[in-house]
Length: 280
Image (cartoon, rainbow, N blue to C red; front, side):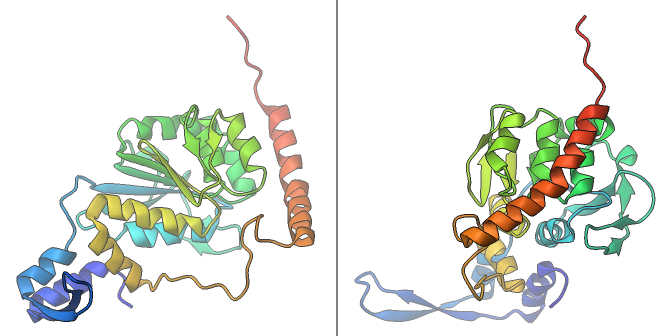
């Protein structure tokens, strides 16, 4: 498919087509066909007016590529907005699975955004959550945003800035309640959570759910539904799983142990290296 749903909208404008739409009559018994005029069709699908002009996705070595590119694809469909991948430093970024990609700019070049997306990952995510430069930049950008968002363990980075204190939020399932409590946030256990301008999602694929919901809020339901059809987002997994509640106990125990073995040494090391806070 084309990279941008907007192209399809422009195609409709050039085509000047009309479409038949089936609707139920008032008594809900008879199905009637309503032919939409070209103007009616365009009015029903084109996005509503909005003030979103700049969207930035924070990227760093060790980020999860789907955390980045799922939301980026969906949010890049917002007409009139510029979407950028913003790295911590110059040079290419390598994801947690070894995918190398080219960012558009770096944090020292970006002073404001309308939408900020903070994706998660593994080691790089934990390190970013202890990086004062990253925290300071997020707090600065948050002063200008209409929406500040996170995907998966990206909530650990966002939480480390103090911006989620007192907020409802969600994140990756691993020690989710404990990790958010560490930052003063209340874990909801939902696929995505909105608290004011702060939107957070659960692990990886939930970032697309959140992005579609955010897209609906910004540009309207029909346009968001068009984007949803463009990517044919209609998940139907081959077997049940994907959350602690739906995963078999032995698999959940294995994954929890594996995550802990990787996460705990990194956090212990960074906690030990963290500068001591002295009271004045």
